[in-house]
Image (cartoon, rainbow over all chains, first blue to last red):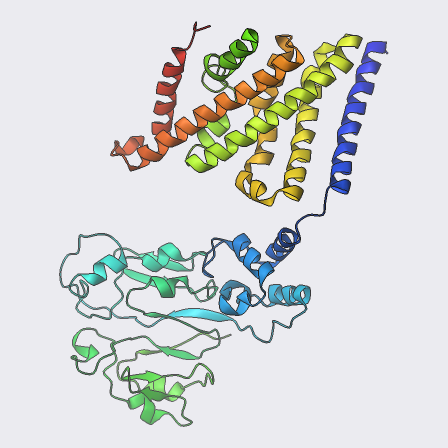
Length: 275
Length: 191
């Protein structure tokens, strides 16, 4: 071989080796990495990493930074996505040395409306639910009906809410939902609630006031406040929320109420597919 | 002294890396959406360019010229610059956290920035002395930062401006780049 070629090979090898050794030395002899940053990076490995922002921090890395400073952040600003993921929670608990699995419970969002209220007028304003709901309490007959401009679709980090623009309905897929709670804050009608995933049924109506005309006037499946479900319940699985004037299912007990679902004249209590 | 000033102005304005030599175009369009990140990127480039120029000048004159193997400069410089950026990142990360947070993702991105390789190769091609090398690298970096800051400032305002719908975003950026390039053309023949 040409001696010049050998020289070049030797040169490049030497420079490469030199660079490698330099990086090694830098890694070895530079002062220890900032402990907080190191811990932040370690913690961020256990976080979901989809940067939904439901915890209130700008992304998972920022949340990890807060956690590194103070573990109590987990209680103050819980990461719902993490709480729903049993395996992740377990490994994270092992890393922190705390039992987190017991405190966590899978939760999903439910929509307290399935109605078909008529449209009052053709709304052509700013295309967000919040804006539309402020104009004479919405463009639908029922003032509690979902506005139907898809605000919840836009904020969902996992695409669990799909949207039918023609009908103005948003559908929630419970299997995809991670229970982060972003849509709860977004909905101007407060129709969405975060409940335990094994909640057996829910009321698909949020028609609050008894002073107003009952839901039946405005919607084919609105609650008419007849209390039939309470009377039909056998073991207190349905109680009556006097403040809202609506039936109430205790999320702590989570008792199934098949009789109430059967008796409801408007069929507005929806059975959930719990498996 | 006069020479150094000439080199500085030539590298920063007349032969600006982005608008005259067309090097480092990816950050020019990619990192010019926000002024603050554009300036961070520019500062990182200035730092890497200067350090890389010094190291490659030494290597070139100590290793390559005496043995007459100048034609492997490109390969060697790529190797050196890549590892240099790594070491620099490590150092900043371990010693100065605020600076590390400010530069953020842009520091490792520079590894693949052709402007850095460009400045080292130009330095060797022009046969600069050590001092001239440092000044030329500084000038190149400052010119790069200047153009990036200008571009991001204009793009920030253009986002709010009422431009035709089909021009929103990248098309507008290209138009701005064209106008900036025309402006910098006027520097030609200044020295």
